[in-house]
Every structure is written in C-alpha cells, then in structure tokens.
Image 1 (cartoon, one colour):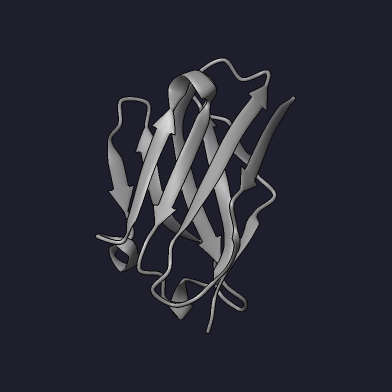
Image 2 (cartoon, helix red, strand yellow):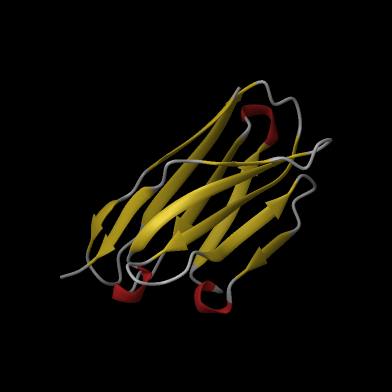
Length: 117
C-alpha cells in the first residue's frame, strides 16, 4: 500500500507565495518521478511541474519563472515553491508519484490553493 499526502495549500493574495509539500510512504522503495498537477473548476487536470530522480525538471509554460519544484529522495518528498501567484493559479493541486520499477502511478488527495484578494 502506498500513500501520497500533500500539504501547504491555502488562501493567498495575488503576488503572494505558498510552498506545497508531498510525501510518499508505504511499500514504495524507489521513485522515478514526482510531479504536481492542478485542476481548476470546470477544467481538466494539467501538469504544473515534474522532476525525475536525477533532478531533471519540466514546467508548464504558465508557471515558468514563478514556480520551482524540488525533491528530497531520502524523504520520498517533493516540494513546489510558488511565487508571484495569480488568481488563475487557483486550483486543487495534486501530487503524482511514479514508482521506478513498476511505473505505477500514485495520486494524493489534493490540496486547495486559492489566490484572491
């Protein structure tokens, strides 16, 4: 059994910052990639950023220069530093963990980020 838990969401004013955290636990021994996705009301879930085990990163164009993804392999954790937040960043943010050997995907339950004045 694998658990993925996100934290760090909340309400922030435009221009503000938040840091999301994601931690995997349970029977997962090595992780290939960890990623952050988001889903706004009425929209499809979209990739925000992801990072491989060797640190290769990929970002959506809409967040480049504002968001930074990082990970701690020893802690099986990933982080998303979000700066210069905009109202259009409002969404539920989900963490996706991909196991190394099986390529199985595990999703977290999501954390709400609301950017509003």
